[in-house]
Length: 382
Image (cartoon, rainbow, N blue to C red; front, side, top):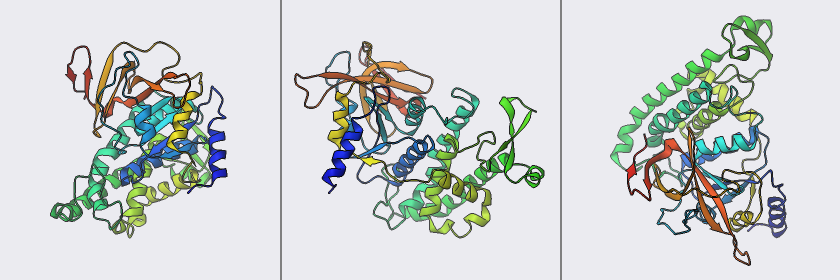
């Protein structure tokens, strides 16, 4: 049971944020799987990089209320599948970001420095970050899942693994998974080798490395830092390092068969993971708050956000996600990478009853189906 004084302090801090700086809350479930834990770690590392405070809420009540069952344009309830917890959700004031990809971009907008995308959002480096994260989330995790499922742990099975620890397929797939993981680690080792400073430069000054100045090929600039990661031009860990290193961290810490030769077989990768962890070291969790505390935040007025004070859109949409959830709302923003829906939520305990507009943003890559209320047609998104 939490200390009453500590709970009071958390509530006071939660409601002390300025209208221009809404609180950031990470929502997770009571028993997250290995990959949901991996995703939450990525978000925490991103917030540590930006030296931002955050809160944590364990449970589904707040998320299910915040994403809303009533599109803001009509207020009519829609049937909706509840949050499964396969991906963490991040609440920033009245806005919810569903999954790692949308959350990282939401955090980047909320806390711009230091940037998660050193060469700027919308550039090739952000595209490469998204591609490598998707590779880690699909190919890397697909190979890792059977090995994690076979572990004697209270969280043996992740919902998306689809392999029972006691089934023959789990044991039969283990050797193949080992081969695939070695191939993935070799790919990361090659990426790090390409970004490692040349030996001549290191011999001249061990604390320096080569980077490309202003993105112009052939113009070299020396920066005074020991850090180097997937991209040589970044003077600190960024989104690519955070997403890939977190999954390798899960592998290294949970699969004993890889610990014997991990450092010897992949020295650059091993050192890189240690550097990321050391750079982003700090408390594992943020300040814990309850689901009710998160809902009480809706009563505060913020001057920034995805939806803002403008009128909601008129197109009602229901989207189906790869993790099984279905979200409904008024279509507000269709960006290059994200889809934002608005929904109406009643502020808990408000007298007279007060309804506010909230939003939920999902990465378009996570949307597998979209239903538009007016046409009743379903469009599958690649």
